Length: 410
Image 1 (spheres, rainbow, N blue to C red):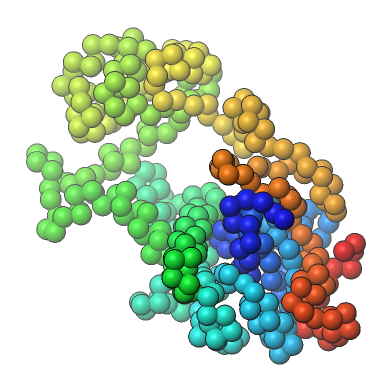
Image 2 (image 1 turned 60 degrees about the vertical axis):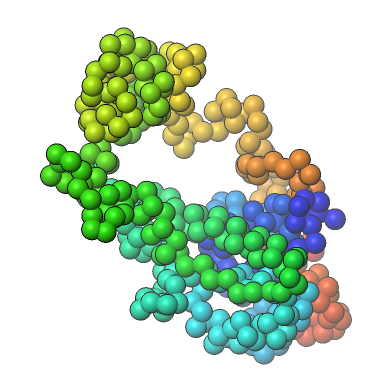
């Protein structure tokens, strides 16, 4: 028994790389039985970001596929597709992240799957919603970042469009998928009915960007700020280049003083308490209108002390601040060390690896039977047996190429 809030939920995961595997790992961490259905070539994420200690076990794959079981089925072969259909009878969720036309072509459209299991939650994650002209376009994270305006935000600051240097769209949409699946499962508990879910990356990321940056363009016609030639939507001050980690006497700190109490405490800390009475900075609205001057004064004041000194002062004065970390220093963060966030675990084939424990806690308990990311086809025989195949039938499927099993220890 896995333990955890989702114990007893079975998920067939046809997804690959990041967006789908992230969603199913979160569900698996909370007790769901996630069956990773891979093609004979395996999830491309197994080789992204370089080879690990053994073939097909990259660092990225290890971090996105723990607590799952891997079965290899060639869904282009009738016997492989038939095996998946048999497994669908006992599944609660089918998750996939290819274009809908590809699923239909394989015989895995919603109507075909629902005919096998009317209670199934059929969750598709793809680039673009199916109501517009982009519906058949392929997509990756960079495509969505550029199309949704994320890269343009960088251009407004630096003059050059750039992607955020991690797969932000994949990871944001993966988190949204968890919410959608759980809502569908909750509704099914009430109604007994399954349903199809469409999760388009483009529309989700446009929502994230534009709810943050539409500002006065929200109104039709657009409102123009009084006394300003441009409304806030087009005002480069909204994305001021000085809105970044602040240089100190020996490094950087991250600070965000937004309320009046926080800003006035900041002014006192940098030796400028009189600024709380300055009409440019005496309120949230005033500081927003004069954000360039506010950031300039803040930056000048922060040069006076070291990062450690500022963090101690800001903690005492209740000004929101945190250390500035690089990828190399994060594992030494004292808060994360207190929490045991990074934990060394032993993988049966990859040796000692660093794992990150689930960030969120639930008082009802968590998954107890932690398992590391699986080798390609590690659980093929086990899962086919659970689906009702006999030993000879399993070997026949493997010998025909309709299924594939890892040749290492079972």
